[in-house]
Length: 369
Image (tube, rainbow, N blue to C red; front, side, top):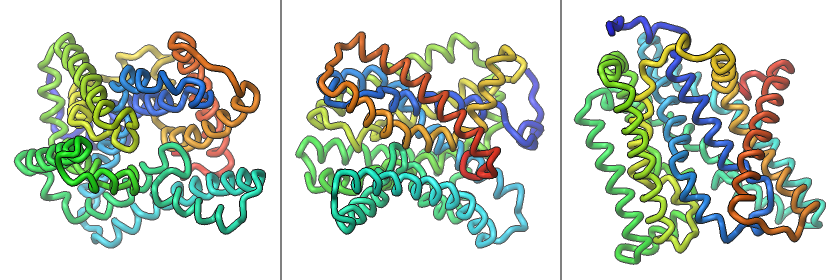
């Protein structure tokens, strides 16, 4: 299969990225799709986390895509100063971040007012939730993107070379090993205590995806050429092996954390591997290979992935609160909770997509697209 040197990268949209975004946003929503109180399935939560560990590719892939596109914009605008480019990118990120954080903060205020908490206590709680990226489910992602964008402008030339990427992967691996050692009590237990305090916005979990995104953009055509020469069955085997590795590593993390996985659920080497394998496996997929209805859905999910990401993270808190009022004492077995999770994911994804489309029509496209 012959590939042009630059035709794919000069297109307004790169279809494999759209497909990756669509798959990733479905995976993100699946982690929030269990729209019942946590206490109703608390004994099953470790099992669910391990079973669905292969879907942990979602945030790594989103981060990689973000910096893939960041490098693309840098290379397309070589005349722009670092300040101009950074100002444009941070403004683009700040608009949805401020919008969705404000919406979530208002909802927290309403909830705490209903519970009768003092306003000063509520404001302190909101500040803590914002800083730790817990103001809504997945809010930490926006904080991570903002932090890493400050590094992108200064390090992007460094990460275009494979030996520098390898160094960053090794550095990220050492960070994960240090986390494991701390959780086992073999090394500075205060380190894991600190990570629990600062939660997931801390970039120790994420910096490798900055390097990966830049490297993949720079070598995109080479990756596509290699991918085109590998049979589909080999790609499927690679994806299955990666999934098994993620299940095994998630099981180990559960053991280390005493089944209190957060905020360490992405501190896995297999997460890094999953992002690379997915980019490799889907690099040569073309629009004409998908049925028209599926293609339409991929385009919609990709276009509105930001809105879906933020809306589902806010709506899940509302739906769980309602379900806890309606069914306060119910408990569920594994088959029941799996059905609830699947149905809830479809429902949450549909509502979030629909609301994103409406918000764009209301002139809020920069907050959802």
